[in-house]
Length: 260
Image (cartoon, rainbow, N blue to C red; front, top):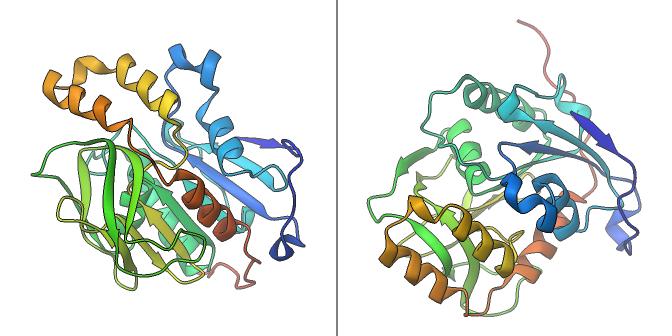
């Protein structure tokens, strides 16, 4: 685990009068071959979500690190991972237990891709390997509810890279966007949870390089289709703003329950 000082000056909106404490729960990292050009995954999250004004703590959950207390941060962002929520790794089960405690303690929870899935899994939803196959490249889903910060339109398009999906959302989480291919794409619980299957933190050049680095994992036709999709516009900027506003919201004061 490491803590960072301010990582670059950013303008502070009215809701950011306090200095937010944000915890990054990392479940993987940028491939080493890409780090010289694109940085580590923690650096990517801080940069793309403009978290420079926050006090940042990072835990490498996939290496056994977790906060000792849920109140070490106001909000926790669970990132993507090459692992599957369906894997029975000890660190995945420990992460799920921590997320349940953090939710009970009214810490804000945000999740991207794997993070989206593990939050639903931990809070009583169901995740499965998608029979539809890979969601790879940039694809669109329909917005079923208006979300402040996103453009007023019917569709949302973001980079994606996933085999698993949330097939049954956790109780209390509402669906904001989805499609026939990925019904539970963007979900939330007002002021408490925000999760999405896509990767708004990925730039198109990074996703292109990432696909090249792991191209051996994909069928050539799937890879060709994914590369072709990179030419369509993505709504990453709007979704990054939504995520940032959620992470910077004023903290709640409820303490973590104690006892046996």
